[in-house]
Image (cartoon, rainbow, N blue to C red; front, side, top):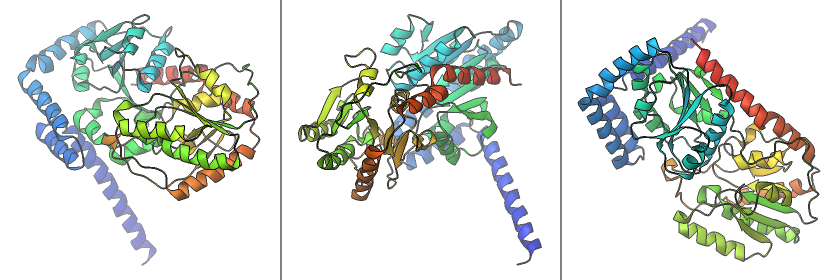
Length: 453
């Protein structure tokens, strides 16, 4: 085959890629068409989605769109005039519900960063949980089923978890800048995201890691990459003091785990890894902290049975600023923080551990490789295990393979013998991910979005 033929083929392939991209963009514009949405819905159901949940959502939207011309025509027209005469000056943060989860706590941190820069309001679609109660002490918090109506008079809206009718917001306020942050580290829900949300109206999408952005573009190829950026989570309960004195550890090598006790975190494999490690180092200890998810009762029972079998394993309960055991007390006890998860995004507890100078050992999953390196931790490659993302809260009880467990134990031996520079670990983390660095990064991104024309 001569070089001209090869070049011609390359051009054809390039043109096909462009045509495919243009086709996807055109298809995306048709998403408001009910039949296209229904086709998406059927495709989603056939690939493992919850049929009744999404059928209910589809029918509710169809009825609302068909029988509510006031909402979709008159209201936007009136607000468009108001917004043109009196341009909005405030910004809004909107979430779905007020549970004490990582997304809510990170969003709380982000709204705190805006104080002094913007006048900010916080919205909850269902403002009932402890986060909503806490926020009411310092911020204006709203809760309403029709969240869209309250968001028609803002110059910038930051959505986390929820994304109500953004096309309505854009029709009422064309100059409003809308961003959405994707915290999720599983990718199966993206079909829903593209189907039920008018993604073409979103001005910017934040991702908590490059790993999550990659997962997004594997599913949604047409969205412009230049309208996306990485916004690493700020850690919430960590150390921001560069003068912090790292205490001397006990002679017994202590491994820590901090996080929820649930199947996808794979704590049972970590216990097995420790039991093998403990045979070589009998004085070593494993301390575990975090809430036990009772909806996986069978898993919780097995967890407690396993820790009773080894006296060198201790369960401390929940750790937190308002708990009996504070984060700093936990990290002062341990020589390393360990994860054996099947899936991760950017675990906040890993950042918090590093902020106290505690190195990390973990399975090489999710975005951990983006901030764990030879100077602050070790990662263990494992065989890929696929979870059904719609069973995230109740996945099959799986454990690491024997080979993976053996590799993890060998890496743990190396980890123990290595001399770690704990102060450098702490300094590097605070410099890159501490409160001041995270605040500057977030404010810069928000200003850039607001000022973009």
